[in-house]
Length: 121
Image 1 (cartoon, rainbow, N blue to C red):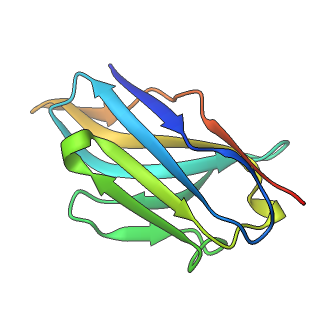
Image 2: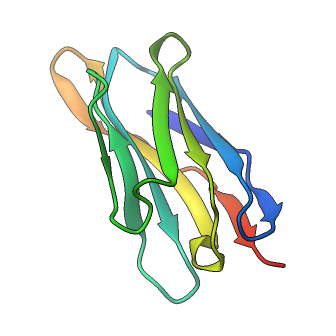
Image 3: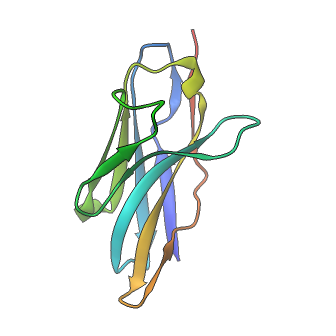
């Protein structure tokens, strides 16, 4: 199994910034795509940003130009730099990834506890 631990959330004023981190550990042969998701109260979990092993990125329209996803392959860690935060960005943020635990087995990691981001004045 692959465990994920998110950190870096908190309370920030509109227009502020936060940087989230997610570290993966466990039985890891290689990590393919990594992504950040968020879930606001009463809403479904949605994909916010993703990054491939080659560094290609994709973002939800609602965060384009404000959020930046990056990864450190040596540390099995993915980051989300969030700038110009808005109240509608308030949610619990989770990461997940497409991981190979052996050369023949690929799947998703186990969801972590998430990290709360609250944008409010």
